[in-house]
Length: 405
Image (tube, rainbow, N blue to C red; front, side, top):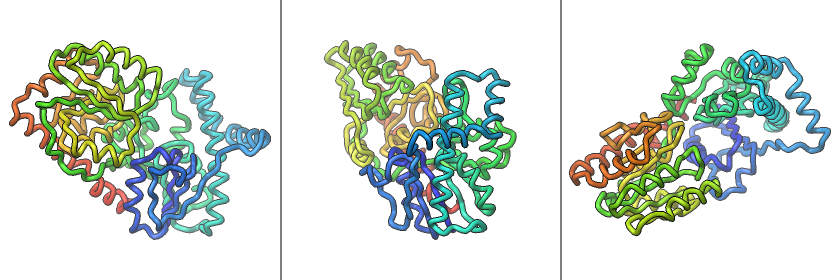
């Protein structure tokens, strides 16, 4: 079987990097990376059996820019989406710009892929699988390619930002109807995402499936305890992650607590958080580590003295960071958003809290875990590991997915 995998953001897809290691059973896997050469980032480790190509989506000249804008924009497909914006009162500068850029980038990817596939001697009648890691502008190019490669099967993973309109500006994502009509299967990483697509798009009935992501089998951390209490968080520093809510909650706690955060991001938001943490008394110790390579991070959390993992995001898909924390046996406190309830069972392996939880109530939940009797705490942390084993073991999930495609 020939599998052509296209990624819009390859150098940032550390979880796709894990997935492709399970492609050894595929006869001819081909990777097209759209942004940044796959070898330009040390985090990428692509198996030797892959054929790799870079799709250049940079305009060669102003004339080339005009050409692809014209080609991508002035057609019936784009006009239909424009009418959708008007009809549903979603037309604005941002939504129009989103539509135009999506169409133009897709046109560039399409032209590049036509050339690449010819150079790889892929015949028009060959049975191939075209796989997009996210539902994006490359997926639109794949759908158009099917007009040439009649025996092609198109599949795409679906995460969160790429399918939930309400999480995007103007409550809009371009070309949804066309994409969902032409994709053969959408493999959702969460039940929440799959239910959303099925409830909102009649055309996707019998086209969606559930194939969760997963994390590596990191040994159970025997140093996890709730006496030397340490909170772990791991995310980009962004307002949607609401790290300020956690920071404020610790102002309501008089007991000794450590907080360590992995991840970087919005510097202005970081300064706001630091303004809060600067008010801490001596009982609260905080350490913002910054970016950490995933392999190093997993090694750290498998050995360090940790007590609880906290995620109070405003919205989520199905957080891989929670899966990683569960694998080492950490109880979880997380907001009930997106697919988080598929990983956190309230009272079993942690606490699932309301999205609009107050800083005071969050402080109470933290103290509930800190003050928990040892036998109850240990039961909760072993339950966390069990949830990981049953649902998020990378080896099981990716082997099953590769067999399916």
